[in-house]
Image (cartoon, rainbow, N blue to C red):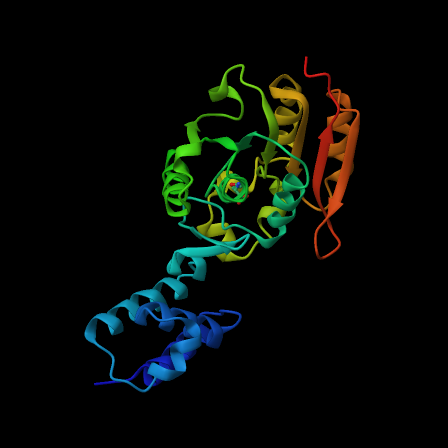
Length: 281
Ligand code: GLN
């Protein structure tokens, strides 16, 4: 028999050899996952004998991490805006930066919301969980992403107030109008893609990260079409790359939005463009 403590020593060495940034941290998270315990309880069970199932689960987790699969995908859940979301390699890992977009959305009333490129559904489903009187629709090009979003809707108990549609941006929603349109579209430039870590580049969905080229193509499509899908007084909230504020704000003004503002994330970087004040025609 062996113990978690003994397995941990070997695992940390393997992760270090694989070039993992913080091998001790990752090994502990993955051991807690294999044991099915909270990380805070790991020390209490570390010296117990491990079962063959636990040892197998830990071995599979370490092999995945050596192959640079992100910890979040191995563990399968990420906390976002105070709730747990299922995360697989079919969806973008919800980022803390994106919580700013949720905060801004909640700063004014709305009854209907559309999320373009919903991925895990983290933005849309957080909004529905926070506002029990709101109904929402989520669109994504990826059927596999939508399957994850549906599981998240069920996990959060908001499935009765949401519908998901496979397709490109506004195409699946017809002529419908919304009080709020949100999106965290792919915005990384073609050139930046090669600078990303293997965890992001090789394991997160390419189409969720970049539209190619200058990174602005998704904004060109969304912003131009948004006015025809906003109800009177409606708002558009877009997450942006931190160098894209002026380009995206220009697109918003060109599309007829009269109030356009940029908001900074906790690191002080430009992160969300908010646009409102179109006639709705
Ligand atoms: N809406 C999801 C998120 O914010 C997915 C975004 C995306 O895939 N680009 O995490």
